[in-house]
Image (cartoon, rainbow, N blue to C red; front, side, top):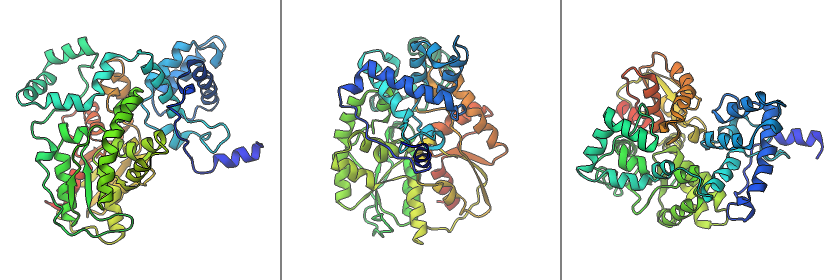
Length: 442
């Protein structure tokens, strides 16, 4: 390929190739090292991603401190340290790397890290701690049992309990751990299916909600807020029953067999909702991304996966679509003042545009500042003993941008709480759905 063609390719929209995770070569460690060396060397020559996460600075520092000051001077153990620092936010692929497909170099750093994690998991080298904290459904079911939930929450808020978690599991004592709730999302959300649906664009005008592990076990209030906002906009909503974790935590661990099992449990249920004329929605950006992007790349030949992906919406993507068709209620009763809005990485990589900011900016006397920087949380990364201080460092630019805002928050609820933890001034984040409900006065 000529130099001109290569440069032209880099100016085209990034494309993504399916992940060949079921092939034998995918788990070939020798083949993996060859690809790691190729991509790491390209990253070394470019270095545009130096300020995204800790994976790239770790790699670049190791190269600079080696005898040769090139990749050949870096021990392979460091290769795996880089893998461990990647939490698959996908931002390098979307916003920084000039060598992603259709460029001839075909660099897909996140999915290369996924491959390495999958090999590590298959070799049995993944920590017990990491296998446990990514079992979000099991943790939620156990911790949400009456009486048990009180013990778990009390322990997570006590210095003794946190020291025990640090010693036994390697959970940092200062990391924010969400409370578990006795009343799950299903007990809090009413069936609104009696309301007449009004289609808009590619939406059917009625929503089946994938509640997510976090929304069901930790912060079901978000589901209540969404239901109230949709009801206020004449959009019927029901909770999709018989679903489990979307699989994103297990994918980040490299346990792709568990992802496949989650897919087999969820996709037929969600596809049935689509067949009945319902749009799909999830409370957490990572879950939306899992259904929209990752599952179609992992299972490219599954027609039901494609059907679910096409019907899945981010909440504010959906509201913005309603607004474009003059079906969004703009009768607000309260202003929000100065809003510092953190844009979650897994929402940005959906390529839907700044829809949350667009909707919040409709509220009178409200000034929205969007912060497009990673919070450093990633679901489980920031709670780990060895990662917490790094996660705080990644988050500090976000905290500095918040300034004197009247309210701040993120579409990713756990990112919002991590930001509050790093901010450490007693303030609490407010999810954008909660902001919108507050502005409506409902």
